[in-house]
Length: 300
Image 1 (tube, rainbow, N blue to C red):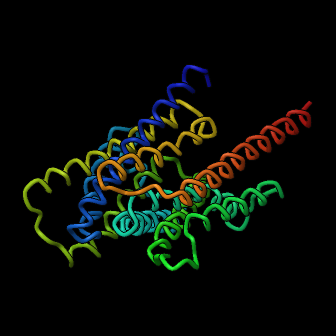
Image 2: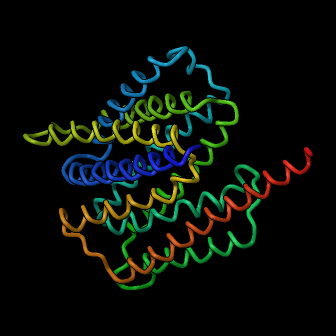
Image 3: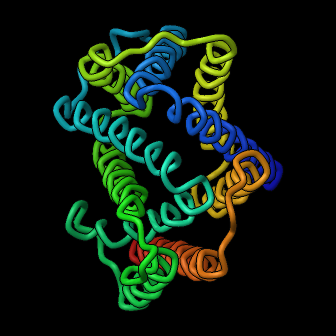
């Protein structure tokens, strides 16, 4: 991987986080007026069409992705992700973009913590300490026990847990199923699941809301396209730290557009969680380099 490609990957990741932050802002607006299930259902219809259009242009087309090695796990991944999207949007509506994203930033720590039981990976004591410190940051954000604690604060925490499990299952199926297969099943099973739920609770859109819904669908497709391009040109470990830009962009939108307030405890908690997350990422890179070095020595 060249330095030029890494720089391009970082630029694409930052662009991806901006698009997803805009998407979150529009989702909050629409879900405050219409049922969350309807908003996510229509968004996923467009996403499924986008996925199929992209894969149809690839070698092997749609037939190549219809027979995965793990069909049940692939289907569960899709349902899990769309459920996470619904729960997270509820968090946007009831908590605001700033606090919801602040809690959600703990998902890399959850991925590390669950990588052992789900994938059988080894997690050293340093990363366990970082996970513990990170969740102290989450508690600072949530302020459980104070009189103003909202039960809705558990929504982004639940979404982070679901997203972490989704990420681990994606790594699991990647052992045999290619990225195109996972991409296809994520979009189509999510759209199918939301259709089963959403068609029973629909309200007609009014005025400019049709335009907002169209922009929401376009940002969903554009965001995923940019993310695909990001991982095509750069290693995940090089660009992952820049995913935290989504918190910054979403906070700016939340404060500027929706009047959210950045509280001192939220700022402090976020700083702790992000620091812990970056440390676990760094330790994972160190561990990977040590393993590569050990394999190279064993082959000499």
